[in-house]
Length: 168
Image (cartoon, rainbow, N blue to C red):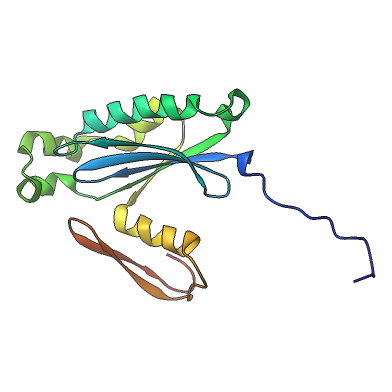
């Protein structure tokens, strides 16, 4: 209209901040760098017969350096954190994925959050993979989302998440 100050178009700067996401699966891991608007800027994948703490840590250390180096120098300090989506209680997978018990038992006593914080210097947030997928659908899903829905996650196993009142 013609009343008041003229409007000033504004938008978020996609380069204002960056975030990392790590998906740890039974056969592979993906480390993805996204911008402030959620667009994927870069991603790396590591394939393995079964996940180990040392294997994941080594992959993250190497991939983090490469993903960070791919950003322009002034933007490298704008990475705000690392979110990890992973199945919980991995030491129980021995029979399902054919992994050695000793390798899977390492997950029971590891502190992956602290390890990844030390490797990257970033705050690390860990969430169950199915809950994380549900949260991503809530935030990034296409179209209008109902305030209440049940989300099913189909992978090696079946999981899910519940959204009630717009909250995971």
